[in-house]
Image (cartoon, rainbow, N blue to C red; front, side, top):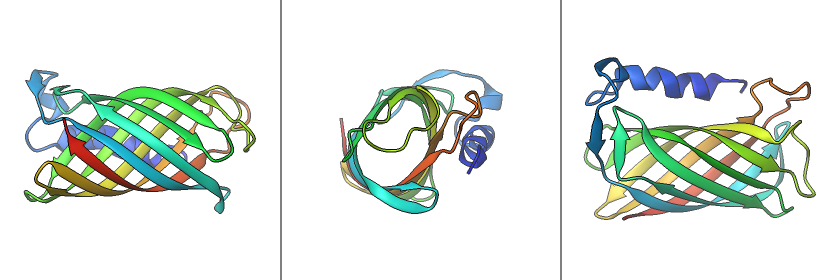
Length: 165
């Protein structure tokens, strides 16, 4: 996965229909959601456990960049805490997709070590919005972006539900 989703995130900020980064980082108010998700955790393409994640967005964005805070813990005690940006692109009133990118700190617990404490998490999710609720299927990758000598990476496949703040 080495950077493909992160590249897609930054590329998406150029083509966002209503707030391209090319138009600047203008402050704007946007809908914010709080999200809880459950995931299967993959390492070297094998399921190694599960994860619970919490995610909370700010109610503003700078151009296409909406700040968010995320925390997760695996069944083996691995924890990740990060702060980054999400870019939401609505295709219809109900359907859309989101790309996320966040640096964060990682502690492996009893699971596999990923090479260091600083990890970057990039993800993509497809969502369905129903009133104040959003239901999503997402995929993310976390790794050090090759800043550590050992950089195997880890992925999650997530189902989540979000409530508008």
